[in-house]
Image 1 (cartoon, helix red, strand yellow):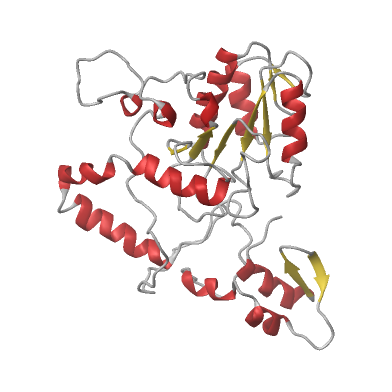
Image 2 (cartoon, rainbow, N blue to C red):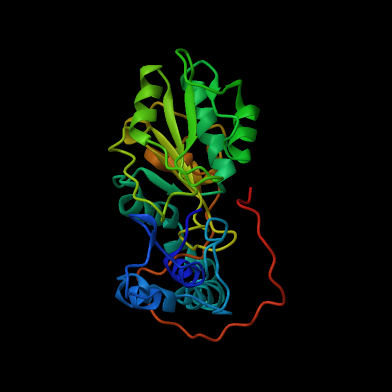
Length: 318
């Protein structure tokens, strides 16, 4: 299981171990207490940047829903009260490019992408459908998806085409998760990608349980396509748009199956036939959610209503 820094320290105090991102589980050095180690951790101060309703709760569900950042409370209020409430339709002037602007920020910072390759759009499920369909249209053959993959990945793969569990010559695209949602195992991305290419297939990585938790370098490992959610370790919140990434060399080759107006050239020329935008923007369908992440962390009011109850959330929305 992937653990957040703030949660792992509390767990360490109870279990007598310390969790680190580099060494896994290890015993506390003699004479050092978990709280002392926490104080020395360069990430320890991030705990104060989140809404923490009950400090006694050991929260280990960041893989399902990340905590609410304090800065997001103020940002959401600004979107609703100022950009929507006052700006009304005039806010489209700066909203219209959010999907690519924020996509570039996410891609260049966390995916090892270059500008113009990442789009913030739709849900992970919809993005899987778009990219698997585009890959199968460009390359003949079945989809490779292991029987132990995340259910959404298996469901969409089966809806798009024939599915086989292992890589073999003649397959069209290989779909694999970077991090196994059951075990936390980290895939050897370079090796799997090389095996897919040797079989003549495209490589599509699901980064949902990896982004924000482990370093990613999609271009360096030779990946072709990627999708992922933003509400887990990126703490974007329920309903936040997912992302998709397409290597720049494939932009002219692949065509996704949903001809939506957000991927249309001159979208406000209503009488035109479908004419997709160039580059990553052609994968757009409808406009992305408007609640954007702030450009930098900032303090916000700690006042926040207490939830009426706490219930376990599903691992991924569709």
